Length: 92
Image (cartoon, rainbow, N blue to C red; front, side, top):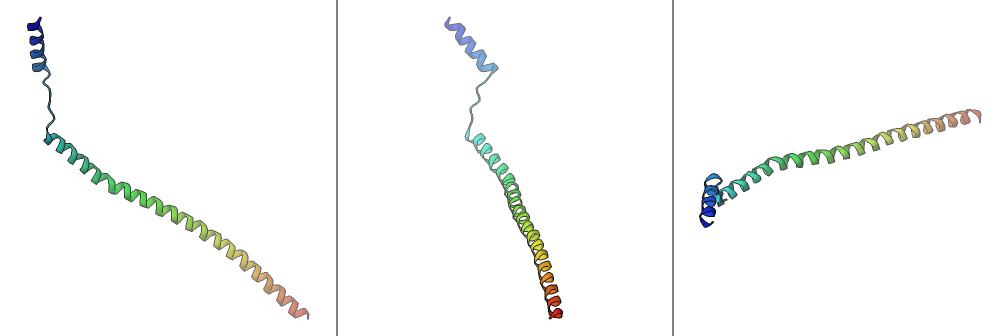
């Protein structure tokens, strides 16, 4: 029985040798991850900054359009007051 297990262990070690992960492999994986992060982080950061700036621009654009409409209303009101004053001045 002992010989059978020894034989099976030897066959197992020949067919599927155990791979030991050394420090070089760990360093390679670590450097690869750092490289991937260095490549993707700027893209993510720039995309996020563009998103926030475009949100601010859209908000300012809405405020600008609102102020333009308010200006039109106020201008119409001023014209109406000027017209009334001119009419009243000519009557009296």
